[in-house]
Image 1 (cartoon, rainbow, N blue to C red):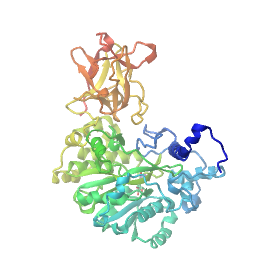
Image 2: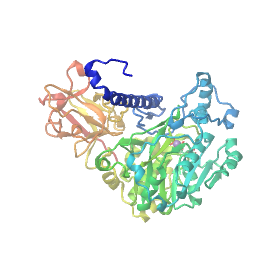
Image 3: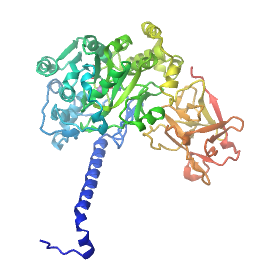
Image 4: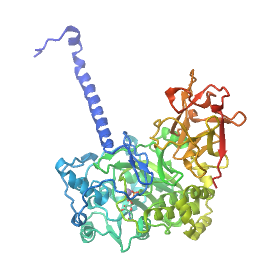
Amino acid sequence: MNSIMLPGPLRRCKRIYPVILFFVSIVIIILYRLNQLNKNAQIHPKHIYRSNNQEEYVDKNGIRVVVGHYVGNPIHKIPNATYDMINTNNFDPRPGAGKNGNPVVIEPKDLLKMQQYFQINRFNLLASDRIPLNRSLPDFRRKKCTTLFEDYPSYPKTSIIVVFHNEAWSTLLRTVWSVINRSPPELLEEIILVDDASEREFLRKPLEDYISTLPVPTKILRSKTRIGLIKARLKGALVAKGPVLTFLDAHCECTTGWLEALLSVIKSDRTAVVCPVIDIINDDSFAYVKSFELHWGAFNWNLQFRWYTLGGRELKQRKVDATQPFNTPTMAGGLFAIDRQYFFEMGAYDDGMNIWGGENLEMSFRIWQCGGKVQIAPCSRVGHLFRKSSPYSFPGGINKTLFSNLARVALVWMDEWAKFYFKFNEPAGKIKEEQNVTSRLELRKKHQCKGFEWYLDNVWPQHFFPKDDRFFGRIRNLGENKCLIKPQKKVVSNQPMGIAKLETCLGDDLTLEMFVMTPDGFVMTDDSICLDAPEKVVLGPSKVRIMACSGYNRQKWIYDAETQEILHLTNRKCLDISDSATFTDGLVTTNCTGRRTQKWALERVAWK
Ligand code: UDP
Ligand code: MN
């Protein structure tokens, strides 16, 4: 049968053909998958700017770099959705749609309809309504995760609490079914849905009828008036029977093993508040996209929640064992598990907070400062549908609500840093007097909670807030009489984001030109951005960049008060203005010559 004659040497190698073929196919499959992942992630426009200068995006690796806040402006300007569209349940599952977390493709003929429906919940409702409630999802866990929780029957049971306001049928019930399908039944005490005054017809009797058929005891609590997610979660917690409370947003999808990994942490430490790794359900395509693991949650100078790259202790620990829970300064807020008794012991939620926002920081500060811990369990992965704006009305106005909530957080937990927050966030400063936080301060006293300085030093040593041990203020170049400025373009996780620049100096209250210089030599500003230069010694100048802070030596500097030079720690070159056309107006490090553009004044600005 050897009909094809091969040249001699090739004939000898014939037996390795199948092997080569095998490897080539593997490579092709891997390339194809990578390409698909990229495509999923790229469905998001790269940057989405919001009306109050907030921004969020998913980068090409599917990493959601920033989680933002509510802002009103709709991005999509299209025919309004009709009353009927809003109030009808249009769930219309197609077999295989969204299977294994794949994106849903909408045919061109339905594009207008899609856009109309998009406005209702500010996500692609048409796509969501085509995905079955029990769609399959990829399992992104590390292999070891599958072996760690074999003793799960001994874990405490949990009540699942899902609060919602005008949620879509398909997203709400996909959340519920993903819990039912992917949690060991022995660990599910009940599911509690808390309806925060929804107006949709189908969320009334039809929902009640539907949940009565579910295999896990499920109840609905209703609030007649709009109470907001904080009070709605409290309402659920008050009736919950399980020894653990697990909160989920109403548009999540849990993946295999998610619950065991959360409950095992609480079993061994009742003071741990545990979050899953939050993957991304794309708001356009409903693709389930893996999020980056080496991130933790913190916040910026405006008290906006942010994901930053992991460093220090936690990064080292993860390198040893990437399946172990690790500390996080704050949690995102929507998805976490907590021991029920501990939840109430520690003050549950601040019921002086309204509608949405700030409760995640409040709980994180409180738990850390009062002796507990907030952690992320990497073996637990839950998808959350992130969207670019809020579909809800905000009784009382978005800003008023959010700033009041954040003012409460600052007043109760942040000590001197509250002054910093109010000084540089005027709208919050203006309404701080209206807040009565007496009962929360009493709670803090009762539990003898530690101060915010302890929190910054111990929980988040990489923070970029001012402190008495470091410089805070303006960095002025004496040669040009201009100031170092934070670039307005946002930092892409660990990607160079551009050259460091000078601008005409502004005023005291403008954070754009405020920097801290830490005792370690990091020159940092808001949002974890650092002055960065290569360590390698080269002839001539090297570009200085503004980058996401990394903790590496290339971001360390020394200020010599006598010569007024800012020197790079490792190569001792001087920070200077480029005089060459190639670097335009960017900063460089170059040999120290004593010329005036190498002289800098560190002008302190009062922050408290
Ligand atoms: N929610 C609520 N009442 C409100 C606002 C929000 O019950 O007044 C619910 C909402 O349906 C969701 C959860 O609270 O299940 C978190 O809100 P959302 O998902 O809009 O916040 P995000 O995830 O964008 O931070
Ligand atoms: Mn949500």
